[in-house]
Image (cartoon, rainbow, N blue to C red; front, side, top):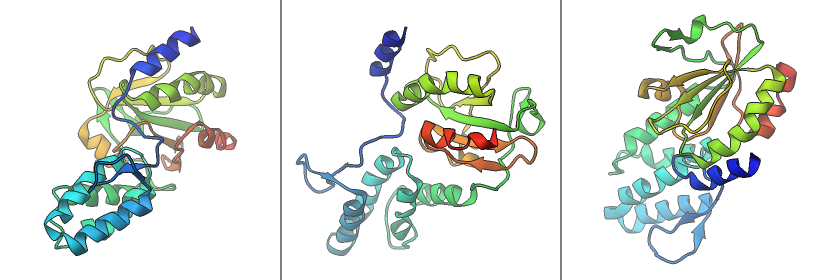
Length: 226
């Protein structure tokens, strides 16, 4: 069964967090990969020496950086997105992204939402914490995460709300006690979801964000809260 799951894993790519820390060079077509620090330097250099392509450079790198799911990298782009002279098409989107990152933090109330007959603020499963998961079936790292997440939350008796961010066909059979929801754009914006998987651990009583784990290791480190 596990080998079959890995065959599924290999077939999925798409809207997901990338593990690679290398980015293509905006100005060159060679195979050299740039670090995030080099990317920031490249945009600065373009702003200084080639103002006509300044906005193009930011538009080129933003989707690639957003796909990594690393919020601190996204925030580095504020230097350019807040520049009134920057002609990038993604300026407003970057600023909205940064605003979401900076407003939804640990200790903040989880944004309420209503989908069909489900409302988050009325969901009281009886567990100390609720795990909110945003995922896409076509995301390799979502599938990779779910292989370990499904048995783990069962063993920990952790309540899960799984929000699918697209309409892709879902090959997964989730546990019966999971709440399955199609996330609207409004919900995604409220939670600042620009890549998947995105995890939010919410306190059932206070409805506040307890943790923003980026992977299974970080989620497991929060077991004391369960």
